[in-house]
Length: 391
Ligand code: ADP
Ligand code: MG
Image 1 (cartoon, protein in one colour):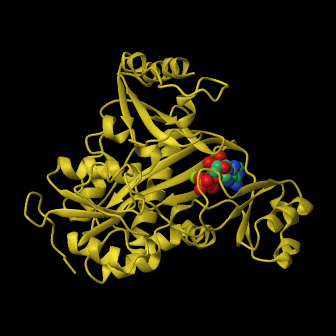
Image 2 (cartoon, rainbow, N blue to C red):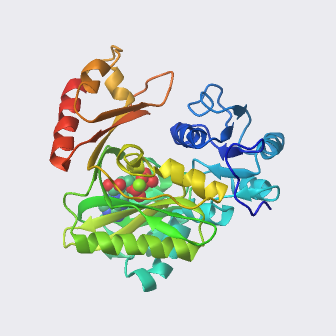
Image 3 (tube, protein in one colour):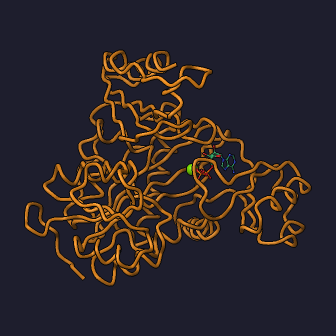
């Protein structure tokens, strides 16, 4: 295995990535800015990352020829999505350096395995997941404790942006919801009284050095991230420090190499609960591009190339607004329009990022805007004005 840094600007200086969405595109931007070339493996022609990468291996994520072609282009490969097949990462790591490792990614692919891991870490971190119960068959439905209702039933695999989740008030609703999952293994979680949702972005190198970014506060709409504010306006310094320390404990316990984002709930009584982790840069970390010395994508490049980690210092308060396909339609209608970018870009501190997706669909992530300012209040004001403009 290559166990040396991959220096930029050499004939071999190409980094590989599994997946061609917006996270892969922003990884490519960061890699290229450091003097690397980029190879993307992704079945969809013209995908966001392939538009900017030097090489596009247009193949399925499990295609042996495609994986061999990616390895031939680069022996340093990362991923932009957690559902990358574990066997593919194994095949790539037989031919090169893969970060994060398949073992770490597979923990994040299964909510039950992930919760079990978080529970084990709780001894060090003092932070635990929500009370939960695995549901693989009707016996498990009958065996669920009354204390888990009302709850949320989630498929253990492949859920994202609130998909694969159903709220259940009682056992009867649970039985119906589980039946509708058509045999997929699920987890029932107790519905918790959330005050805020936060996330902590952390990165770790092959040498074991780790960094942690400031805590970010996230607001979701219809299960999809809507805004991220950093610094978090509501979370106390105590809770922030506890979450950051838990994130550092978790990343080192995993022996993880790369960028990892951990989502937490802050409950109404001020306590902290760990929700889930993403083994890659995260939507709630997009603000780091415009507001931190080193972005989460550059950090991904540095960990993959085995270079020193970058400075995580935030130089400006930031308010990030996701741009979903909905803003490409006249409000309350199916009439397509181009959003008024001239007006948005006239707002103070606006940094517009569009992902190059050809077709705007409702609920599809098309881009984001990060507003930076001297104070968070000013950045939030500009964000509110953008919402008015975009409708
Ligand atoms: P996804 O993979 O879709 O992001 P999450 O587990 O993060 O799945 O759940 C999506 C959202 O649903 C969370 O951001 C939170 O708002 C809400 N949610 C999830 N689990 C709970 C819970 N146990 N109690 C209360 N709200 C929850
Ligand atoms: Mg989530």
